[in-house]
Image (cartoon, rainbow, N blue to C red; front, side, top):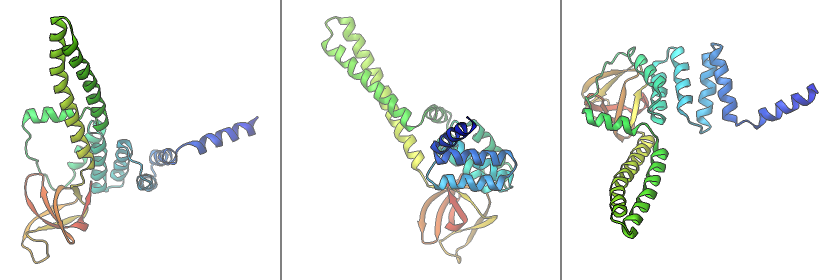
Length: 248
C-alpha cells in the first residue's frame, strides 16, 4: 500500500508544471533563510519564460534580504508592471527606495489624472478587453431595441442604453490598449552600479552633468551605440552608459 501511495505521489509531482515546482523550491529556500539559493531558482524560473507579479515580488524580497537594493527595486517594479494593484510590492518598493542615495521626487500628477490612472489599474489589459466586448454586446442589443422597438419607451430606453454603453465600450477598449502598452513598455530602467556620472553627450569626453546612484529609476529616450539618453523622474536629462542600467 505504501509503495502504491509513493508511486501516486511521484506521478502527481511529475505532473506539476516545472515552474510551479521551482517556485515551491524557491519559496522553501527563502523560508529557510537560504536567500541566494532562492534567488538562483527564481531567476531560473524567469529565464524559462514564466512571469507573474508574485514571482517578481518574491525575487525582490530575496534580493533585499541579501542587501542588493537595485535588483530588489527592479523586481518590485516588474511586479507592479504586471499588477499595479500589488499592495505588498508597492509598500516594499517605497520602503527600499528610502534606503537609496538619490531622493528624486517625480513631477506631481494632476488629481483627476491620478484618479483615472487608479481606476484604469483596477484591471489588466485582457480584463478591460473582455469588459469592452460585454459593453459592445449590450450596445448592439440597445441599438436593436431603438431601431425595432414598437413603443416609445422602448425606443427611448434603447437609445439611452446605446449612448451609455458606447461610452463604456470606448473607455474599456482605450484602457485595454493603455494597459497593453504599459506591459510592453521597456523604456524604463534602474541604475545598477553604485555611482554613475551622467554626461552631456554620448561619449566620455562629454560634460559631467550630475551623478546618480544605485536603485534610481530612469526613462530611456534613445540609444546610441553603448550609450542611452535618459530622463530622471524630475525631468533632468543626459547620457549614461547602457551597461550601467537594467531595463524594467
